[in-house]
Image (cartoon, rainbow, N blue to C red; front, top):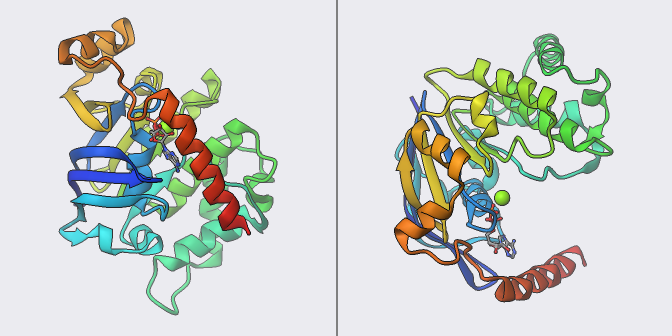
Amino acid sequence: MAVLKIENLHAKVENQEILKGVSLEIKGGETHAIMGPNGTGKSTLASVIMGHPRYEVTAGTITLDGADVLEMETDERARAGLFLAMQAPQEVPGVTNSDFIKTAMNARLDEGENVSLFKFIKELDTAVAKLKMREDLPHRYLNDGFSGGEKKRNEILQMRMLKPAIAILDEIDSGLDIDALKIVGENVTEMKNPDLGMLLITHYSRILDYIAADHVHVMMKGRIVKSGSTDLMHKIDQDGYDWIKEELGIEDERVVPEENEEGILLGSCATREALEK
Ligand code: ADP
Ligand code: MG
């Protein structure tokens, strides 16, 4: 059974500290939800767990079954069993969806070993049918021209195929209509098993109607400020987040106040441009 352990994690981007001491432990079989308003650091946490190069960890630890995750490259993290369904999946023209998934699956096997093509196709067809996706989607370029909902379903398709030990789903519900939400929720619920630990990141509680969470955490100002059970989720669903802010004496829940945010965003645009050159 996998155990992902995050302790006192601090991380910064563009010289601005975003994560300010996150501690969280996810075990196989458990489903944790992190809820929170926009700009509180949820996606940053997901990126840092996967090793996005733009984020610098300044303190704290992340371990998976005792192994130091922060020492691993992103592909090693994936091989170790970590998976992230991204809030905004990247389009990769030139690489077909099915080749991408096959390569990712092969990367998790020992050198020289490959997944059987027959088994792969069978599994992929089953997953596409279960997710009620268009049959041509595996053969098109990854996310290229996919609708918002198709991109989200495709992240779950990858999860089905890759069978991670720890899966982080970042706002998998955003941009999904109610039918798609139901399909995604049912697929994720069907995947639940004692070997899979899940972290659902969500702004709204509606996805939690379809995927039950055992532990609910609230993120504000770059740290987890409150943890509880589904009762906490129901209360947020009814009353929003203001009561938590009041209780904790938090005025602005965001990590970066709006004025600075523009500065960072400009900074990150500049970085992106530099990278693209
Ligand atoms: P959430 O997912 O909770 O909405 P994020 O983690 O996306 O929050 O963002 C938290 C803060 O960190 C925001 O102010 C955001 O602008 C900033 N931030 C996150 N990633 C980057 C980045 N790559 N470049 C610049 N700022 C970033
Ligand atoms: Mg986010």
